[in-house]
Image 1 (cartoon, rainbow, N blue to C red):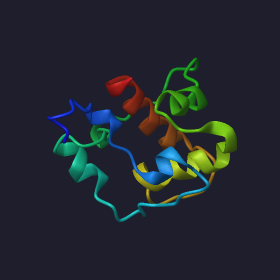
Image 2: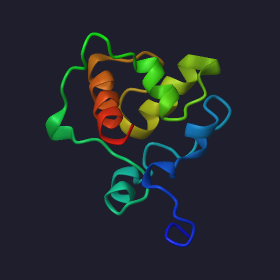
Image 3: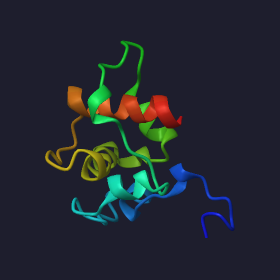
Image 4: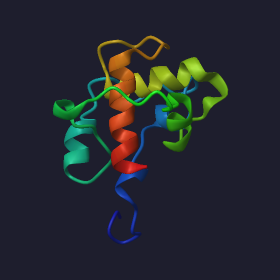
Length: 108
């Protein structure tokens, strides 16, 4: 389907990405990194995380990635469920922002 319909790699998302707070699947064990390595979804480079510049707005970055920011805390939790996996709070840490910035730079 990806090839037949020319679906971009970054358009492969989970329910929680599309409807944060309302959907909470897939869970932290879903193999997003493996799928991204095969062209289905996106992933960050853990060996090249840098602190984002001062003018980087993580909320705007989440919006650009397609997260519904109506419930900001739920959107952050959904992001973290997919990419961070070990800390599922609704607050972005410096590491979370570095991961988000890496994704933003590479795909958006």
